[in-house]
Amino acid sequence: MTRHQVSAEIRSVLTAPRGHRFPRTNTRPPQLAVPALESASAWTETHQDRQERLLRQMGDNPRVAYMLEHGPLPNWVTVARHHREEKARQAQLAEAASHAEPEPALPRGRHRAPRPWWAWPATAISSTLLLGLNALEVMGQNLTHPISFLT
Image (cartoon, rainbow, N blue to C red):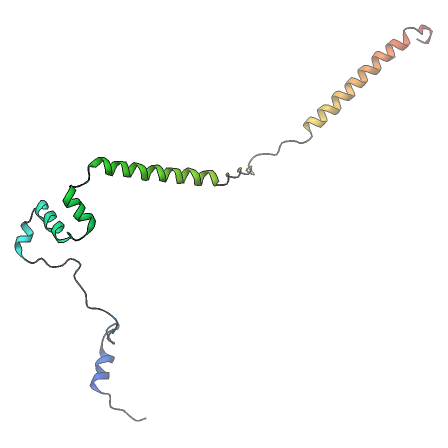
């Protein structure tokens, strides 16, 4: 078996820990999520000052321009919009509930004993036989009274 010389670049790849052997060409350098502040005075800026500064920066936006000209919206406008959205949401839920299929009845559990199917038919048959027996007895008494010599 012949031994081959391994170049320094290949040796560095082979000795690198797993996950660091090959460069990732499609990755971007990490960017900060929050842009850096220009000066230390930005840290001492109040909420009102920051709001005014941001509104001046967004002056070309038509909504911001309208707000700067006419003032912010009164609270009742926001509340009315929330009420309209809530009513629309409830109407959608009611419509969806009306179109939904009714829930199927739960099947009887196996823990209950089945009802006897023969209870009512047996009662009907026995009461009919008893009524017939009583009718025969009454008819037999009526037949034997006029014919007294048979008894």
